[in-house]
Length: 112
Image (cartoon, rainbow, N blue to C red; front, side, top):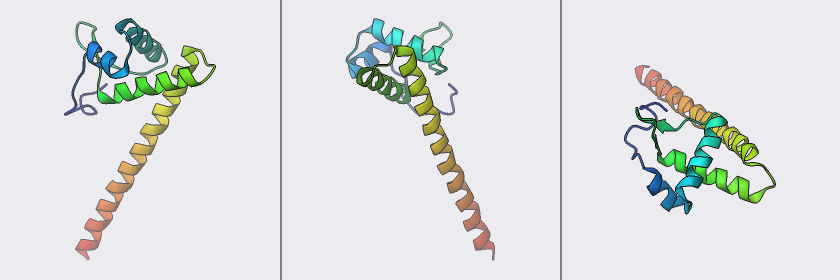
């Protein structure tokens, strides 16, 4: 993940995330690897250790909800979460572009 997206956010360690989600560290590692295989990007330092931002915790929680509420494999649940993440990101970018466009329209109106 890029620094721009997570600027100003707190980077959590595995034990903090485990406490928030109520899971063991081995379970967190397993879930993170499955999500990574599905294409999700976690923050990784130069030593290869994962760090977790609030967004990552939300994704992990969603993964746990999906896998618990359906007869999906973990891999299928990860694919469903990835689809949800991509849809959520698209909605955010559309809103940001619209806001930016409105800002320019307001600037143009001020000139006339």
